[in-house]
Length: 163
Image (cartoon, rainbow, N blue to C red; front, side, top):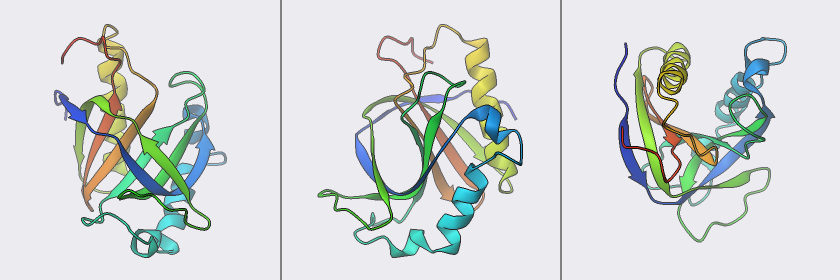
């Protein structure tokens, strides 16, 4: 399912949740993968329901941040919900500021977790085929629009050509 991503401006917002640090190469090996365990912990401990002050819509986000370099370096992944300002601290949780800017949005749908894996495959294929579109490597995020839909938002450098 190859689709063309859409360019969307995003205003800054905050997500509160649980975080792990990982690398893409670590996620390819079940012995070192951390993202699946992060999501298991997030849902088993009901973070999506128990975060005080969570956004009205209760949508769930996976935020990629604190990139060491590019897609080959280490980065943080936060499973959480958007929280409105003022952002207050939550014991055991972290807060991530999602950067404002232009994002390319890739749509995925199907059965979890394969739909997310397939959608990230589309992201990687797109950037391999379009090296003139530079990623920002500031914040990227997955917005879960239901149990079988995800919109992956990839931050684009301000000088990037329009998709």
